[in-house]
Image (cartoon, rainbow, N blue to C red; front, side):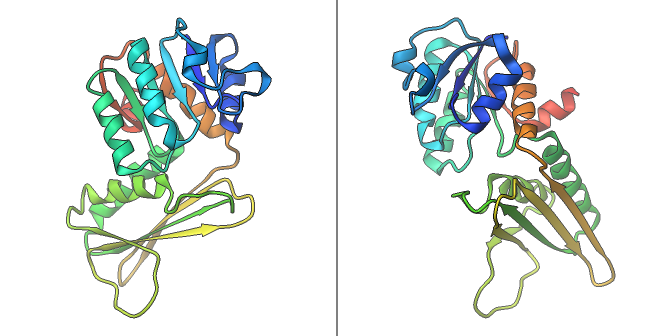
Length: 241
């Protein structure tokens, strides 16, 4: 694999760089530190077959433009994309292979699958999602919380998201509550609560270190080798395994 890293000087970029080593053939980082090009224009054309992006969601247009120009696959590890930015990702997948996931953890992919299965077994249960991250995270709810919500919504098509709780008003049956906590240096905890009048089921995933995301991104990049154009995610990676 010949990888290009966008956000190479960031925490995630450095972790991925450490895993891939000599397989990295190009790097871009907005800070320009360590002699790394600040832009794709500075980097120029390199012989890469996969672009891994862990920069910032606002850079997605530049990331996809470069990937399409180089005819290489893209692994999008950033989160917090606007609807307009997501539209760019979906459009790019019509031209090149794109791997896009709100979380690169294999464990989270399994959690989404379990949440969907549990929701199907308890169609009348109340379901709430709680996500906890460090106090520097800027987007809420997390992309992973939305992944869990969308997984449940596959078996509850009439479900609606209720982000945060305030004021007066009873909980409706169709709503799925999503709550966000921001505390200290928590890497990431995601919990799904499934309650019926007679029993409670709780599913939980905790990220011990951010290394799990780097490992997942590398797994995704290797999974994308030889893939044709289209949009891929962790579900396909799980099926492949």
